[in-house]
Length: 348
Ligand code: SF4
Image (tube, rainbow, N blue to C red; front, side, top):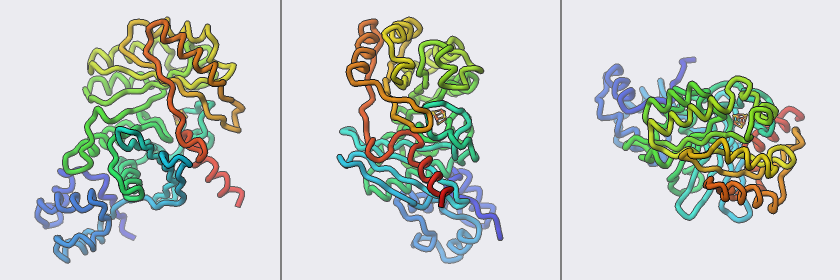
């Protein structure tokens, strides 16, 4: 069987080159992308292409839209969650959240994750492989077709550590940014990392205008190591230095994600320590009352405890928000749906 290539992995120049190499006119590349971004994923339905080109395309390329395995809508209707299956059988989950300012999609970047964060269901079975840029992009095309609405913001915060899949993720950002594609501005894209220091610096040097969200989750290395094995490699002071470098280079405010876990990192002393280490930085703290994951026994602090923590940071001049809980009735927290699906498959 010929190894078909996913056309979504191509940018416009690569597709133009493909046309040239295959004896076709370069302008066909733009026509094909026009169809794909209008949700037409079958070469046979691209009516302005000659029959001979459609045949050639089918012989060598495919439009890598993942198949919907399961889909859920939250009771309030604001969250849609999809389990998608790719050609090789790998499964990921994608969430679309409806806000007043538009639809925001949370995409996965790897099949599984090797970072091992103790509060996260995505990592329980380790990592299978990186997703290609086209596979990451396929989530947006598939989800948009399902909901029938425009997507205006992208969050790279699903399964996987985006900076552990650096080249594919950067190309994905370029593709979503492109005027022949979704045309989503970089400022509408947020990349979340568990704190891979060399990659944060590398990203800073590339001068993208995306928002960087760093999963800090602890005010000191002692607690962080218990939650995130990556903390053994990169201590908090190195991460914060990399973040300052990022701010200097890009002039962008950093978001620090902080999953509040009852009895672990939510004491008033933890809040004071967090305020100390972030003092004077162009940053913002996003508190996330953690969703309970059965495997690790973590539980969610009470709303009063969350408010106290938030208030203590605010008093110290740290801009802080509490993430609005969305879709908890459909397992919307990172990796939970994929995890329960894989578990069900194994027990069949
Ligand atoms: S929180 Fe992110 S980096 Fe950590 S294991 Fe989960 S997917 Fe990986």
